[in-house]
Image (cartoon, rainbow, N blue to C red; front, side, top):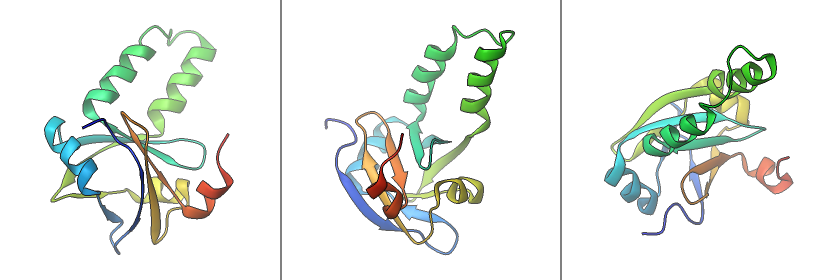
Length: 128
């Protein structure tokens, strides 16, 4: 398989869980059910554990004692949370749902190594 590709419309249940599309579920089962969800500008990015580690490595050159670098690190880590796929579902924590404006309908957008979660109205408008 070529990574996370395509767009899917799914529904959140009353607890904030969504069903992972079968194509994505297969990729996640090959790697690890452990995920990291990170708030971006009006949407969420879901990182499989392996891809999260790659991005952490990219950030490792930043100096936590430099104010600008520290602010970038804080923005990235403070807006992230760990979760896992269970029985083909992902529980999106309430703070992340709220930050992304997710209510009942969610658009899942494949981005090759990660995928994004969007409120449909926000996806139509795009992000910066």
